[in-house]
Amino acid sequence: MKTCRRCHKEKDYSDFFKDKKASDELRSWCKECWMEYSKKYAKAWRIRRGYKPKHIREDIGFSKSSIGRYGYKLLKTIKETMGWKCSRCGSENDLTIHHKDHNGINLYKQKRYKEVNNNIENLEIICRSCHGAIHTVESRKNRKFEYLIN
Image (cartoon, rainbow, N blue to C red; front, side, top):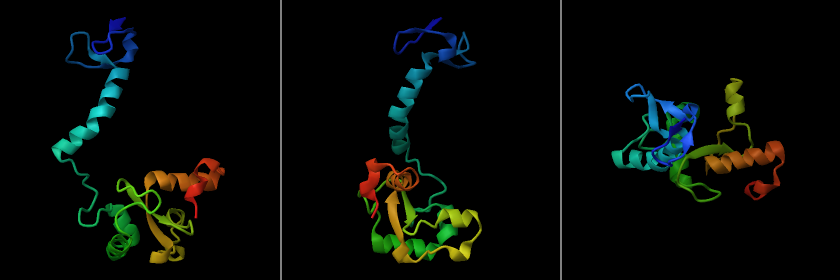
């Protein structure tokens, strides 16, 4: 048994991450405390350090895979016409593109590129949480998010 230096609870050795530099080869904080700490401070640390994901093109804010899928000109047009926020909730974080006819990535995975409808009227910018909610409603008929579907 070992006592966590953060929460001061006595816990089993399996509740601590390994650390070869420590005398007992275990970290001084338990796993639970480390996870809580990392969730709370990791994002703030990245912001202070100026962390920017390498796969995002800064001029339009989309990933290289999205550029390959939709094309640079189409993405730039979408961003200019629709603005850079979720059309459902107004969030400006973690945005993605949604096909209103629901035939987007599935047809790409099947390599049926010509059948994909990438007209600007068929696309909308939404955050990942709204995007997940839309597909949850469709697949599971979850009434909790029903207001998100047009």
